[in-house]
Length: 493
Image (cartoon, rainbow, N blue to C red; front, side):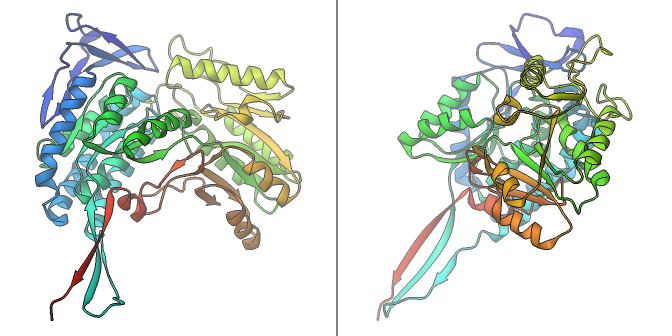
């Protein structure tokens, strides 16, 4: 959460102040504006950042363009040294980075540390994968000709990331872009800039040349508009809502600007009768309430076979009820606050809508009364949810678990696919034939079979339908920052 202040106003309770990074130099906003960053667990200001706009964004783009002429000419091995050193520094500083992430975003410290370590692994993986941006030699059909393809970095990249994973979802853009020779301008969510600023500290300390990676903070529409209209930006990589993704698609059409879009999700979690209902229910609760359900691939519709529905529900309710809620910096905390008041109010609305339409509230459903401050909401489980409840028709992004039942495979596949989203899905079964049919039948870019946490740097991440365009991570994530050049030779003699 954040509020805008003027430079003349004093920092609250001695909070730190950080600047934007343009052309290798930390700088204030031209206007002198600053943005206050709020801890969602305490509602206190924990820091301030420079708050710029279009002019700073333009300068950052120009800096990236200038730096690319040298950066792209380095060997993949030289670029890899910087990325690997960045990963090493992140691991060395993991506790400090995770503490900052918890304070500005709210997730428990172990989750925050996991995000830092995953992001370090992403830097290291793309450091190596950048050495494998292969072209190919193509057999000729005309005597005397030779054909080949080579890879070329796409150009200056603009990266727009969200608040729920402010480090991971930017690193998935930064690492492959830098690995292949692109330069980049990053815009974080205004509410969670501090942890990503510390990642830029790591990049600079690892020897990143000035201008190769830049960092601007400002109004989302103003910064995005400069990204869209500036011809120097060749590609925009965006993670966020489907609605904003569509706006970017429309705006990018005028320049045929390349886009990578990782958008909304509404993941089904499907449990077949041969699965252990107690084991799977506990896994479901951990998956659902991780980061308060504020995860793009969070399971959000739980389809449990009628034969084990009762047992699954009993265990899920008990497990949700026993989750330890509190400030993420405290030991043993499993659920932190929601990200901001707006998110909590939306959750209250989702639960009210569902119960008004006949849903049965099994546990939770309210803002926690145990805390005087902070956006703490009780982990919530419902059943008998109406098909037209907003909880089932809109991306919830909330700590609310609706449990439904089913009896036939075709029926549950149809229900799982009955959404405009197609990012992730989860299936729990011990039957290989069922698992295979579900993997083929579900319309989602990521499918976890007995795996509630499938994301890993070496495997592709992205969605179908209105969940986005393209893939991040894996070799596909590298290709997203490359153009393919076809070269044809006619030999003499």
